[in-house]
Length: 146
Image (cartoon, rainbow, N blue to C red; front, top):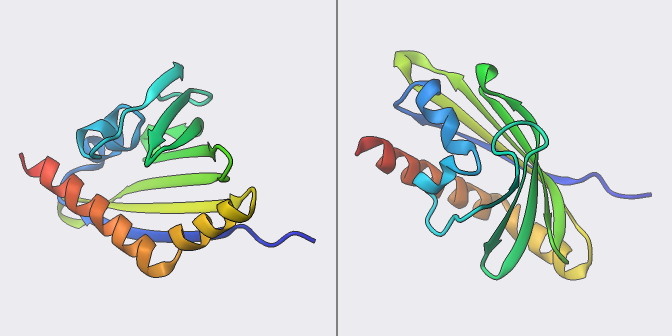
């Protein structure tokens, strides 16, 4: 019997409305704040079924938009990091007090081989994941303050 997929979730607050924040979690929108993010669009752009590819730290990853509901502040991606791991990334942007946005990011991953399992264990380690999401928070807040 297989194990339950490994998952981590964290949230952070941004001082900007959902309408400004949500587009920053699309393939092209992430370029505004994520250093080195260079998606290659293969089909579509944001809509469900769109596919894009990235290369990060030498690892090629193929992404597909599996849910795109901007009116609800929700987007989800299925991703395959070739010869490593696959899983889901879910982002939810919801209104918070004072006109800000609460952003929740969940990664759910499964290694496809021993190296991928090791990657998933490290990536989803609570400390590592918290630092990564805090890095996202800082980068997006800096971009929004310009």
